[in-house]
Length: 106
Length: 116
Image (cartoon, rainbow over all chains, first blue to last red; front, side, top):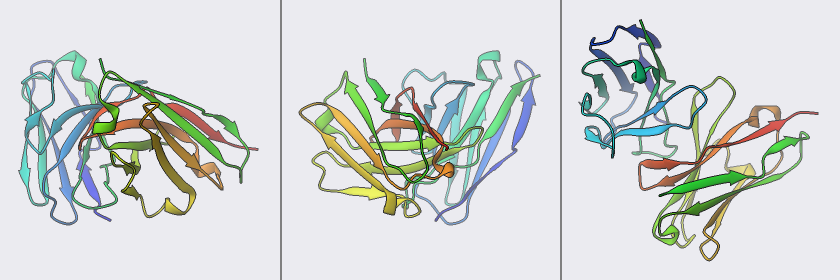
């Protein structure tokens, strides 16, 4: 099983600040997907294939990385971005998720 | 509009079985892989399994495969998840997903509580 380790576990940002979330894979993966989950809601696809924005996702979100290290960046934090973010790999069964990064508004 | 609506959850006794359904609409159901993901209360997401368009390929999480059966009815645009030998650790919200990959659409989830 490919374990995905996200950091930080929790973070807070002020409006306009840049936010970076890292996902490290124990083994190399082909690419990474990212999901956003707001409190009480279902997860929503944010970024797929490492760097492609899902439909309707604002372009302040971006993804990058390769091999075992991937990053989700929010260029300028907005209040509506407060949520938990999960990385997920599709390279190897089981298709594991990271434990999540909770992003709060400062 | 893509819609995935789960049903069949509730409170169940340990050791029993349960079958969840997911009604899909707004897209050509028989063209897509479909999957299930669960989330225990206050915890992260766990992939359960997936099924391809004609049910010829079904993949399960190795840690759960002995208690799961995923199936689909393309005529009814419905995905199913049957779980057996339920234990308290199976208590979770179960989400139906369209599995392109990635999981591009999610249902609202259905709660399953395993308790005596």
